[in-house]
Amino acid sequence: MNRSLPIRLSLNTFALLTLSSIPGCIIPAMIGGMAESHHRTGSTTYPAEYDRIAGHSFAVVCSASRAIEAEHPGITARITQRVNDRLIQNANPSYAIPSSDLLTVLYNTPQWPAMTREDIANLLGVERLVVIEIVDYRLHEPGNQYVWDGAVAGVVSVYESDSALPNDPIFEKALSISFPDSTGFMRSDIPEAAVTAELSNRFINRAAWLFYEHEEPNIIAY
Image (cartoon, rainbow, N blue to C red; front, side, top):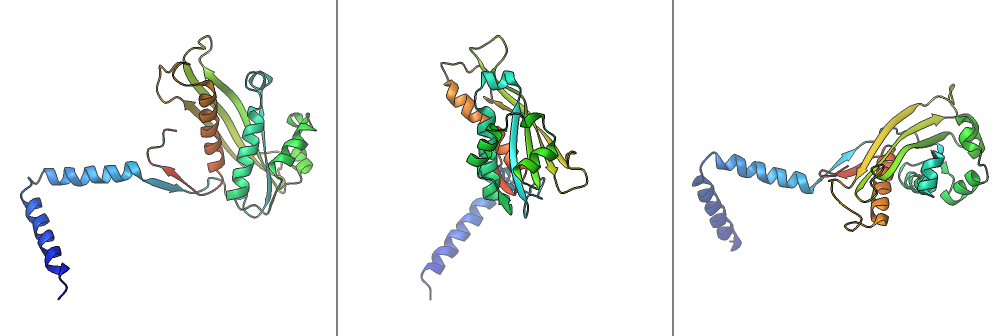
């Protein structure tokens, strides 16, 4: 006979006796608390909102106003590179321009924001053009540079150059991200580099996640 069997039976009996001594109204609360704890520490898988990069060539381009670029130099290049890299790794394209080469082409074609979407796609030689337009990017409220109140808003669009309407978006999503998650943090509390990094990281996540199945923590703040 397995010696551990009596021990397991004794433990199960003890557990049943213990539960039977607990008032009935408490047991559901205990189970609910355990479920809530599991939910908080778990994650959920979400499908892509646009899944037609798979099997096609693509490129990401990002633009912002001159005022945003002047105040936050390099922000569009950083978003372009990181979202492009993420989609290369996760969206299963048939072909993609390496991010360093993509940025070189865009740098050498400074007039690209004024071009039609079809012409940009043809310039890059891709079937799917992901366009990210940053319409707001700030680290604090206007006139108050001492308290962090970061926000970034933009629109992510997809154009299919092989469709009948290559200049009309086939997919469009507005994004709005903020950081910190509560008010009152000052420069002495969080360094500017950390605010900039977290704000752009959150926006990049939300933009990239649109295009492939991914997991998000259930208690994600953004």
